[in-house]
Image (cartoon, rainbow, N blue to C red; front, side, top):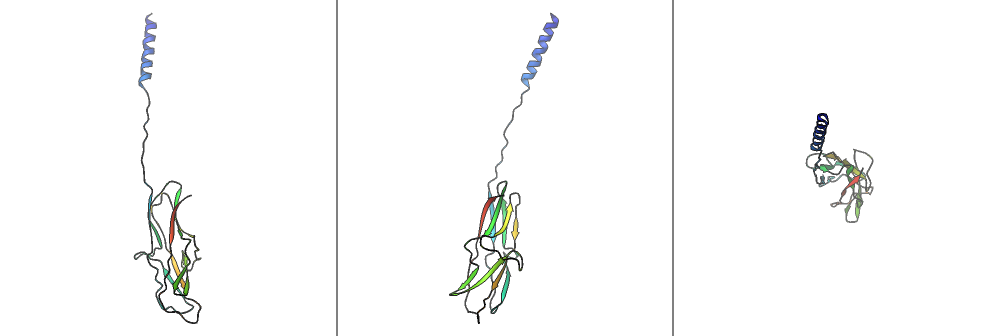
Length: 164
């Protein structure tokens, strides 16, 4: 009888210990807003009076650095990439009235010219900053003489986030 009582007490203790030990979990959360900041050169200046049948090479500059496109902040989703491309509206020309001159854009000096919609820079998630120098080459034309005036054009870029 004492033995049965002892076993019952032992079983009750085991059950009560088992009932006291339980696990619980909590959700841990953290949020980061997506954002990115990038910049391009403000002006490409080929200078003046190069002459007919000449090329003028210029490195795109931001401030005093030789930087064509620079990503200053890149906080994007996992498995994503910030891609900066030449905009599809580029004609790669400068205009002066009816006269136009062509120019080329490349990633290296004398490198393969980029075309519209060309990828200039890709920065994957987890990489905070990046830059891509750009090189511009003006082709002054093949006419018998230069046409005086101020030539102007624009180059534009598009940034978008793509899946890798």
